[in-house]
Length: 143
Image (cartoon, rainbow, N blue to C red):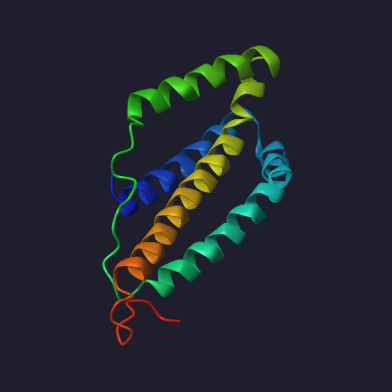
């Protein structure tokens, strides 16, 4: 999946989560659940600024994908999610408690995606520093 597709997937799942929350929980409980996750939202915003900094620093070069050999598949991700849904169903008091955890999982997915992308950008910077330092006139990123 490309980063654009992943972004569209996150947006679609966010809308789906809000629709399901409004149907089963009501608007007041939905707002309270979103407010409970403000710490994680602030962390995601902070990481987004770090991602933006690295993206701006590498805007003049081709970004190499150092994560392309990842063994994480959609099937293993789905099984991981379903496993935690069963645990949430048992420990959070049934279906309502289980779906109340979905926004938390969504935020954690965004944080994980941003961290992996930041690590890839950092590896790109290290790569360009190492490979292209023999020519001091050329630096592919802005200082």
